[in-house]
Image 1: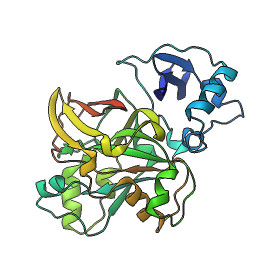
Image 2 (image 1 turned 120 degrees about the vertical axis):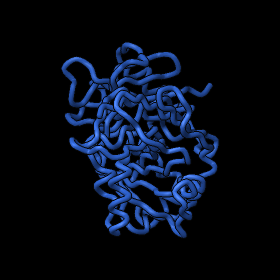
Image 3 (image 1 turned 30 degrees about the vertical axis):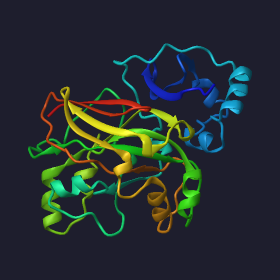
Length: 294
């Protein structure tokens, strides 16, 4: 019987920088913190997944042999760190205008070829964390719910047929954007860098789900602000698919374990005010909750 596996990183006790690594297997929870640090440095979840560590037979054998101690179950109000820490992530590459309806809401066309920009790993925040735009910024701050794809092995110039083999797992992301700044920079033909890279601009989580557990084309993505629906779409409606995005990027840059690809946001992006609660959700992965303070 297939097991449902999730990996969380809970902000707990004196583990404020690296967190407690909690493994969920069906309805059971285990503490993986010591096991993943046995070598003196943390093992990348992305690498473990790409090596097949989470495949049912191998995983069951490891679980029986390792006997990790039980952990307190993850609760909805737990504050979580990103499942992969910023120090474990080399780069975050984000796909723009990958849903036709999202391009249309800005009166723009879908690009003729994939269009990517970057977010810095240090912009990452976890579930139930509070973010603020830069001090003094009074413009529009937008939510953008997205699928986050974690790379598990080194890739150079891979074709689409082989691209899925490189996927380690998935998370939910919120590509927060300083929309007013973005518009001003675009008018000047400047890059989008400032609008996408303020502290906390990339909430991500709530957990890491091994790739074998999910088929992105069967998933749905949504965003809610204060309980009201803002975004909703099927991931099969993405213009550029996951293997296409990976293959395209690998023609231009070397992808490495821990790199993250954000797959674009559907229509319905909108402004956030102080006190707002944003929940981005993908069934099968979970709900990523972000609080806004301005």
